[in-house]
Image (cartoon, rainbow, N blue to C red; front, side, top):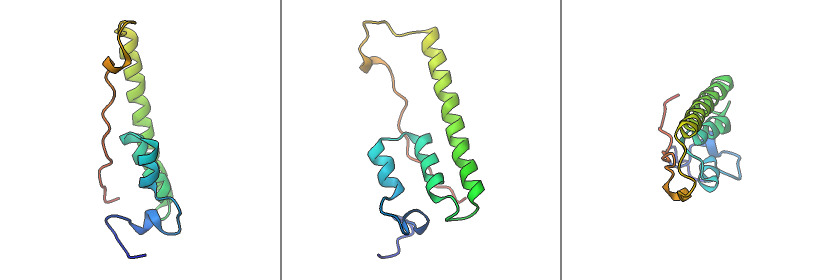
Length: 101
């Protein structure tokens, strides 16, 4: 395998049969979940394992807060029962931003 630090960094792919990005795309994860998977998958492979796991927790905690806010928003202003699901806005899917840490 050719070393590709951009498309297939070793801390994500070395010794693996499934690349985290492939799992993220296959599972259709949104931004926060994808970032958590990214940090969990590289934990201890690029630097401090605890720091990577703490980063994953930050992303998951933020997602939980957003989901609770969304749930509360819908509880206060529910969509009409006759509205098709397509009319209920979904959270936008955003790719993880590259971080140096």
